[in-house]
Image 1 (tube, rainbow, N blue to C red):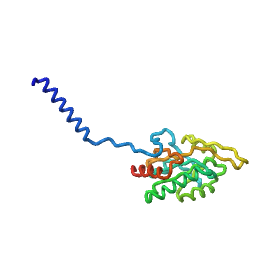
Image 2 (image 1 turned 135 degrees about the vertical axis):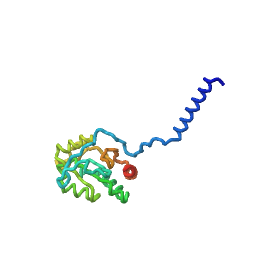
Image 3 (image 1 turned 60 degrees about the horizontal axis):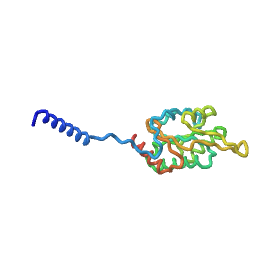
Image 4 (image 1 turned 45 degrees about the horizontal axis):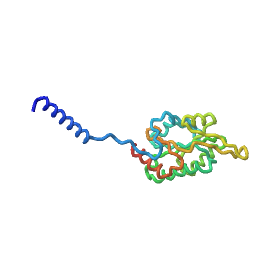
Length: 203
């Protein structure tokens, strides 16, 4: 066999060995698959600066170390809001000890009727450690804009009986305070639980 041919065969053999080593080496970590919409790295939902029901200003950084679930709604909502909060409470309880690492935050889009007292009682009905936030009209609008949340008043039979159209979904943050998921209303408690377990496991 002539020398050039031997060199070619040796080169091909070396390439084959590299390919085998590469195939046997550690594979890249797979991106987790969530039930909710993965919005990791989104340029929105990065700030939430509103007072709680005790008048204390709250910020996203306050909740680092926990998986945070933020929902915009109002206490007189007939279905979407109570269902969402109830499912979150059920998931938190079903997680056992890990449930202490899950924080629910309810942001009112109806500060005119949702007084601090009303809000505190409302979220307390679902979980004693859920937190409600209530700003004035300008603060509420700014928070909704920061999260790309839509809301609008729908007139009722009287000035006091209006309803509110609003985005029906929750924003989920990991323990580092980074927004990770948007969970649509109607996805169910099981889907939310699976997503929260993945984030809790990731730490």
